[in-house]
Structures are given as structure tokens and as C-alpha cells.
Image (tube, rainbow, N blue to C red):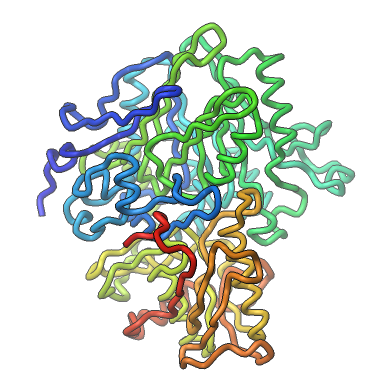
Length: 581
């Protein structure tokens, strides 16, 4: 089907916000959806959670993203029609396709893939040139180096080269840490920008042993911030790395470093930038996740805007949060290269007079790929394309990962683990990265790696009691639905193959999971031992990489069981706008 420019322009919407008066700016009559009216004197371009996706992708946004307590019914916990109504987006528009799961496959055929670094390069250069020299800066919110087979093999070095050509001037991190300190520092030695993380400190033992640090006096491992001269004004950009790295990932990757939200240290740093350094604006480049950022914005004063990431939420309009010192705008810019945030500031006499914000979907059909970036990507991929291009299966339904409780990609992984490792139950982590494959679109080994490529991919089989299995589900569920955002670590619910259960997200920990049953319909016994298969354990394992297990399963022709994996019955959330349909 031919894709027409007017399909994109008809009903397309990008968001702008003015301090204290949010509004939606429509572009149906615009010559191009990327023609942004020049405003202010400083522009910050924000990219986050691309997960090393060098080429344009399909990525379905969630149909289930439940908010609990104060988070219920407010962004980012709106999906499908509720999301469209909240942000005034037409259901049949290009933006509805980019921002929601509504009629995804139909819209995918109409509007095509999004993202791609060659296309991003074209758009970023254009938006920089629109405001003139030394008035724009490009920042990355982390999860840049991980998410593909190529990034895993090259341990992120490919993305460092791409970032340098793209012109990223500052970034923070999350999955970057899972390559370990040695590789991280080696990559940063080649990175032309700055790696910022105000919330990463040496452990007491590491400090005693004189481990490397940016500031030995404070124990800060990395530079906390930079000050950029934009349009004759001073803009501070503070980095906030993922706070829970040693909890969510194997601690052996970062044994010398401690993480955390570090509110007190952040407030002191903001105060110093405002006082001693006399900056005109303070921006927090965050990988906390949006709910955490919303709480942080209510407690730390002096931050003008939080450019957020981690939870992959694409929110068209910033959320205005009041605090003791005034207000802070909180944004989140999606994932996989699908979106580019554009923050324009009007700075005057040491203050932010006004703000405009746009979250632009990166429609690859509307942007010519930059030749230099396309050439670099081709060279980086060349030695691996042949090995990973084998077509190993063709799905008979849409494969996606992103939803709170279940996604066909992980249900497929669970089916492979149970079959190939002869297990009764399989567990697959609720990662939010990973691509979407259309039904009838052949899968290659490169696609399999795009769902599984991490630095600790080993599979395992172990005996667990029914009580232990319930405890695991309760623990992960609390991470997802704790009413205090500071106890949320991001990610979705662990996927369980061969097991069904009921979940009451609004209940307290220990009382959310019930009615656990095996695939044969028998209830799970608390005292009985079950054979459980999984992957991505924080404890060292010796099994085959999960991509080999999944690849073997797919090659066998057992693509999809009639009904994948498990059913999850939700209780107590009827009418929640974080559930589609």
C-alpha cells in the first residue's frame, strides 16, 4: 500500500505547552509536521530508550498500563481510546498509530515503521539548523547501548560511534552499566559527549581502596552535570542514572558503585547550580521512570524540566507538578527511536519566561535517511547481517512485548523454555524493550536477538515450591503496583508460562496474587516442588543463551501453540483507563 504524505498530515498532532497553560498544537495545515515555529532562545533535543535500534522499527504501544492509587487515570497510565481522548488525537491519525495500540496492524500498513538513526540524524540536523548555531543541544536519556544482537556483540561500541555522528552531547545510563565497569569506561573514552550521573557513588569499600571516581571528595563516580551556553544563556543539565541498577541486574557488573534516587544530593546540586553557577535554567536528564519523576518533581525544587525515560512512556504533553519552590514540567519521550522530544526555552534575566514542548513521532517514510549515518550503520552491521538473516519462522499473529501482564513475545519465549528444557512452568522477565513483528512477517535470528540480547542471557532450570513461585509473582507485582513510586523499578510483570493466576493490583503485597493453576487446570500446591525454567537471572547461571533456546524452538516449526502460555485474571480494576477495551 502506498503511503501518502497527507495520511500523516490529516489529523496529525504534536504537543506544545506553555508554562501554566498547556495546549495541543495541530499541524494539519502545516507544510510539514516537522516545521516547528521558532520560539525562545534555547532548544534541547531529547532522545531516550532507543535500545540500539539502528533501523526503523514497528513497536506497538501498550494496551495495559495500569495506574494505582494517585497514579490511576493520569499520564502515563492511559492507553488506547482514553489516551486519544486525553490528548485530543484522532483515532485514525498517524499520531494515534505512533502513540497507542489502536488498530495497530492496520495502521502499520498505512504509516510504516518509525525511528532509525539515519532518519533521526536528518530530523535532528534540521531542528538544530532551524534555531541557528549554539542554540541547541542533543541529549540522550540512556538505554542507548543495549537491545540488539549487534550492540551485545560489540558491547555498545557500535552505539558510541553512532552517538558521536548523531552529535549527542550528554547522556545518562541504565543498561549501559550491564556491560561492566571496564567496558563502560572504555566506551566512554571514545564517546565525544559527557556521561552524567549525579546519583552514582563509590561504595565505602571502593572509596577506601581508592577506586576511580570523578570526585574523590564526595565519592561521585561520574560528572553530575554540565552547563551549556545556549543563545547567550546558561543551561544546566543534570544526569540521573537508573537508581536501581544493582537490584534489577546482577550486582557483579557494578560491585564498586552504589545507586539510588539521592534526593538530598540532587537538591544540594541544584542549589549550587542556581547559586554559585548562576544558571538560567536547570534540566534533569532522568532515567528514573515517569512515576518516580513525578514524585521527585514534587519534592526537589529548582528544576525547570525533567526529560524522562526508562518506562518507555510516550507522553505528548508535559505534566505540570507544583512544589515548594514553584513548578516543574515532567516529560517522557517513548522508546526505540520512535520519538524525539523538542524543548524550547525562552530565557530572560536568569529565569525561564516560557516553554514550548513537542514530542515528534519519527515517521521514517517522511524523512530521508542521512547518507553518512546510513553508511556507518551499513558498515557496523555488515559482518553480522549474513549470520543473522536466516528466516526461521513466520508468526500467524502480531508479536509484541509491551503490556503490564502479557505479551506474545514473552509467551512465545515461555513456550520455548518449557518445551526445550522440559519444564512445567517458565518465567520470563517483564522487559519493556523488544520489537513488534507483524503477522505473516518472517522472523530472523536478528529479530530473536532484538528480544533477548543481554549480557546475562543464560537459561536455567530449578526446583521451586508453589509458595516460592507465588512469592516471586508477589514481589514483581509490588515493584509494578506499589503506591509509592520510589519503590517501583520499572519493567512489567514477570511472564509465566504453564501457569494462570488472578491479580488484584490495588491490594497490598502478599495479597495481590491468587488462584494459581497449572496448564492442566490443577491448583498450585504451596508445598509441592515444580520444575521451573527461566532466563536473565541476577544470579550466575550456566545454561544455554535464551536466544539459542528460542531459535531452536522456532526452527522446529512449533511456532505458536493454539493458546500461548497463561491467562491472568485482573480484579478490582474495572474501568481503569490503563486497560484498553
